[in-house]
Every structure is written in structure tokens, then in C-alpha cells.
Image (cartoon, rainbow, N blue to C red; front, side, top):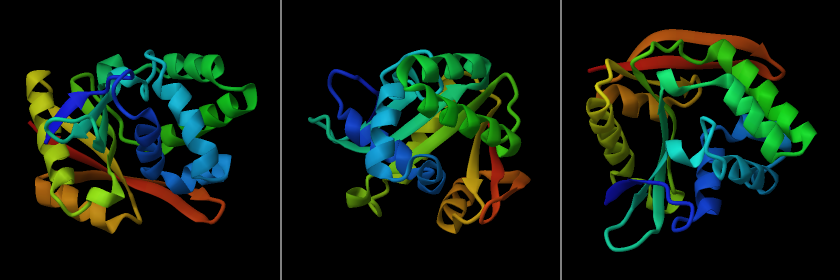
Length: 201
């Protein structure tokens, strides 16, 4: 296995978009309906460079010798993040109503996601294709993200875990991430929230 930067001319962008969808399917469904409706919109954003979900921030796990996507990592330096760039991308790449929905999605995320510091590496999405789960790919992605953070001289690696996702929480804690905050807001069907987690380098 290897973790490589997404190449939009080589890798399966549909699969990448579906894996990003899987990381927050419940919220995406609230805004757009289902995977079939959401993934093409995500794909248009992935194809753009200047945004947090753009191809420059995406890494794919492939098998040696081919470009099949086994999993993904969306990660960026806090110092590189720009909400304005994200919003510009939405309105450039999507229909106005869809762009507005992504904008609202981002605003609500800002209420609950971790507060980042300048030298943080933020893991925005970690996902493994369901056909390859249980084969150590999640661990491989996390290990690779720590190596990436070392290369970038980061002080911490930060991620957020949905309050209901006990399996992911257990994986991250086992890997050495610690909860440093819990945030939630009232949501239509109850509570929407995350554990903010960090790994100190």
C-alpha cells in the first residue's frame, strides 16, 4: 500500500467523491438527498484546486502497481485554510442553490469543528472503501498522516469525530489521539456534535 496525492487524471474521482460523502452521509443527505445526488456535487468541488476539499488536499491509498482507490485522506494545514476560497469555489463550481447549501453546511461546521492553530495539520476526512475495511488501511492512513505532519513540522494533528461514531473514536484513541473538547448544537432530530481530537507531535 501507498498513500499518494490525488491525480485527477489517474485516480477514480467518483470513488473519491463517494468516500468523502461517506464521512458525513447523514448531513449530506439532509442537504442533498442521497449519495447519488451528492457525490457528483462533491466531485465538482474536488476538481477545483483552491478549496479545502480540492484535489491539492486529497491523498489516496492505492495498492502497489495500480491506481485503485482503497481509501482517502483529506488533510490541510490550518494556515492554508480559507473559508472565502471555499465559498468562491462553491459558487463557481455548483448551481447557486447547491452552492448556498454547501455554504450553510460550512457555517454550521464552524460552530462545532475544532478551533485550529496556525501550525496544525487538520484531517478533514478519513475513509476506507467498504470492500477493504478490516485490512489495516485506516491505521495506515493515520500513520501516514503523522508522517505528513512531521514533514510539514506541525505541532499537532487535529480531527473531529461525530459523537455517535464510537468505532472511529476508539480507533483514534487507540492511535494516540486525545479528546480536547466536545462541541454540539441542537439539530432537527436532536443533537449534532463532535469530539475535537488532537495528536501532539
